[in-house]
Amino acid sequence: MAIDTEAVSGRTDIVMNFKAFARQLAAFAATAVLAAGLVVSTGDAARAGGEWKTYVKKGAIADTLTDLEEAIISKGLKIDYKGNVGGMLDRTGADVGSTKKVFTGAQYFQFCSASLTRQMVEADPANVGYCPFIVFAYESAAQPGEVVAGYRTLGPGSNEDSVKAIKAVTKMLDDIVKEAME
Image (tube, rainbow, N blue to C red; front, side, top):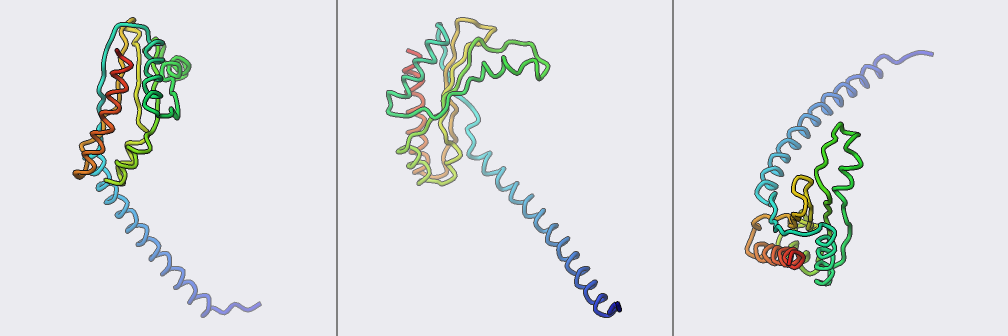
């Protein structure tokens, strides 16, 4: 079987040109991803609440968790998930080389409000990052009998409507936690 060297040579050039193009495209894509990452990071930093508001009372963690759950439900909201952080840490402590008991109990509840979420995301679609809403309660092993409950705060809002919506969500979260801590 004869090999057409001219045809092979032509295809090699095409392959070589394609590989060079692919390398340039990959370099461009990497640059674009880095640039986008910087923009996203800047945006996230401007929006992130990253803090929490807490209330403290003397009592039993089990009672506070029940009160927190009831406060959420009393607002007509459905709890999507209950996270047992204290139980998870107890269960996995040995796996990560720790024997320290952090909590006697710690849970969070995640939920959503259709009306407030709609208000938030219509004001700024990026506000979807605040979903779901989360409230939590814990009793630390270091301070038994003292229960802390709170919620993650949201950022300042990107425009007037966003600020208004975020204030409404914050009020709802604060009302829920206060009701549970009475």
